[in-house]
Length: 490
Image 1 (cartoon, rainbow, N blue to C red):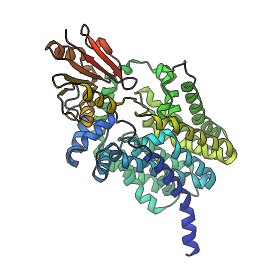
Image 2 (image 1 turned 60 degrees about the horizontal axis):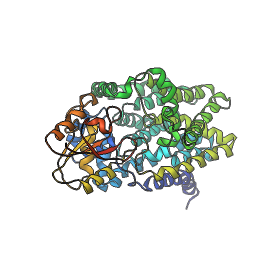
Image 3 (image 1 turned 45 degrees about the horizontal axis):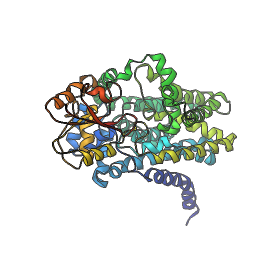
Image 4 (image 1 turned 120 degrees about the vertical axis):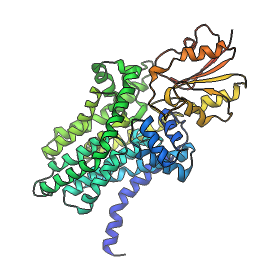
């Protein structure tokens, strides 16, 4: 073995270790959690051809189609079981640690970058992205890759310059919020010393090509953006004022960048147990403190610190228009990783303590049998009805757009079901305001047929109020919001 090949092997030893660790943690109990609403939407698309998948995802989803194509690859290679559908997201979420580490290494060295990479590998937030049949693990991987390539390209790497636009276009076709990564990647140019970066002319050419290749996709993107705004406006939570979002949702999303859904909503704390507030406070401090310490220091250039602060705070302005979750905002992991690497360079024990905290939070995360943000155990609920229902009884699923898909995925009885608002999830963009659960269930009961109701809609009538005046024979919960109610006839 030559000294050069030995050096290459040594250089890739750390990122390979990070990837294998991240992948292993994402494959642990990958099928242990029930699918949830968005995952059912993606799982239903897997039964379609690539062409139908692309066209149907444009009609029924506010997201571009490329991520769904990636999930289709997962289904083809590994099957449509929970583990099979989650395989590609697990791999890509684990691969995201590579560009993150490689971006940090030239600035902070191997050791601090390793610690920052470990935090991504082990945090419940990033692990959950790799255990979800959805788009946000793919978004993080493509976004981190784009910023790393931009850094190389602005420093004169020709191969990275050639890859920058294709990766940028692919990312924009994964999720519209990728524009945050695109903006960050191009603005990174101005943080590099003038004598070291490529001429401004090359930068402007890259920006022009990026805009030109995306232009044909701009109109469909604007249409999908309007669909998302329509869905948000129709949701019960959209009635909150901006002040409430910034007081409660922004801190919640920030804390969840580390602990994922383990950090409960700030406005819904259960103060009878100290665990929820403790997880929230520790996670919030673990995310914000390294970033604040870094941007207030002077060891790095002011331009790079301003860039880092912008990546952390500007995405939060999205709350002025909508209500994003932590899963939407993986770009905030770039400044978080920078802050942790800087912390590891100066105060290594504190940085290691953050990694250990994330490892500790994995214990309750793995114990969950539901997705941590939307804790509805559809697998258990459908199995329960299958065991106790009878052929003459009617199943009514009140779960919006994806309710019928959820039942069909887990049902093994082939019993007849109604799914108001979810019979045709890929035809048009449904809105919750069209759903009248009381009238649907009431009409079934009025016909003399007992009804099993699966209800998984936040807000609106619950329990006996779904069918006022009809006897409730049983009611069980399979998560905070998923209830199974057996209504009898008079």
